[in-house]
Length: 342
Image (cartoon, rainbow, N blue to C red; front, side, top):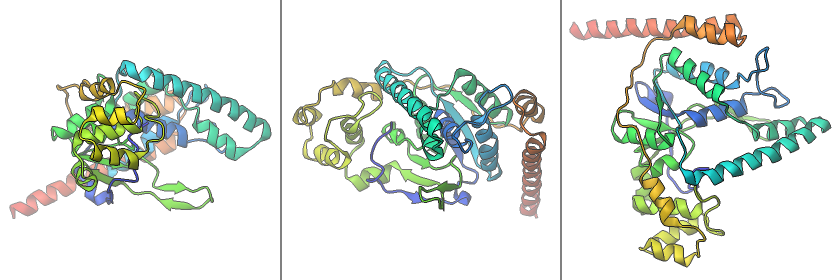
């Protein structure tokens, strides 16, 4: 769901050159949903192999992650663990929305309405255990660190960023700011072009949001940001307080110093302290390792070509480009080293 303050926070576009040599933690589950929902055929059907197993997520990882690797960005991927009990209601809501979307998708197919088929097919996306496990495999084969969070991936990634082990967290979910990530990157794993409803395309660039800038711009403290999240709705209190949007929530946290008074004033019909405690006590893994390696060509080919019918030519083309990049990078490193010695 995410913190609904996109229109309130300062953000700045960053170039790929700005991200070179930076270690970035990626919210993996969110990235996989992006791939599974956007990488589809014209009628909205996901890409599949000869046994009707979905491969959209693997296509996304192999193509887009490899492109980021060639930009010299050091990515690690954080996967969700066991969700808090309070998230069960949100999961039930999502399941209901998917059932409704599935019914609308069937109607769109009957009408041969391709726009509607694209729209509703994206709303039916589900990540199966096999999809998640194979995504982890492919990322590891590509030499990327994979971290299994004990609970919410955003909390784990934000902790790693606070510790200085990564430079930023990549996610379109602003909840990372609630977990105190110093830097949040959006649009990192998206396609570099986005199709508008009009049929035209616009360029998509990464944007950076810095927590200190957000708090200074809004004139609030960290806990007040959390109060805004609870007022407007989180995964643990869907919809928040009826009639309270981001601007009203900001006004309320500035007007009332006591959170008890805020939630009494808006007549909240949920236990805000319980939700507050969930965010404050989210478990994270303290002992983790971030090690990057070289792509394992054989393992990648076994998974993509032999198991999932990927084009051997296309896989080899990507691997060749990665290996060439690595070779050129190593040669440049040696050149720089000896140049400095002279």
